[in-house]
Length: 160
Image (cartoon, one colour):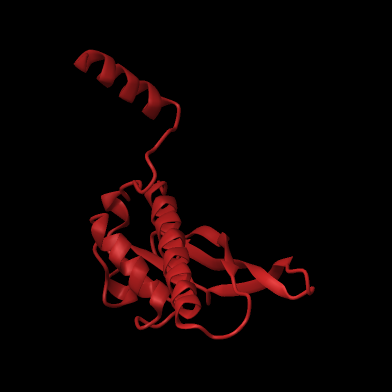
């Protein structure tokens, strides 16, 4: 039974399957990483720093101490109508969040130039400002930032 489980695990990992929530562990060669372009107080930067630290990547205080410099553009948000009700009022919106970034590794050598990560989700909003809908939007935004940060850490994990 144990041999079968190990065989299935080896087969799944060989075909590229990775359990959701698992991130590729970035190579130690990219550490420490300096994050430029957005302030440390930005919600996405806070999530990204958390994800990098969980992956074992150290963060540099300034660019002169960094082995890798990650330049982040401002996260972009676009909202479009997804569905309408019988009165032709928008009740669901599709929200797209995207982030432009580039990576220099080592500093001065542009390894990834102008890459884009994006995610989208649907928000139900039949009108009015109810506390539950406002909270749902905050949770969706946090989840979108977490997903973008996870994807970025995965990309960094694939750097040579």
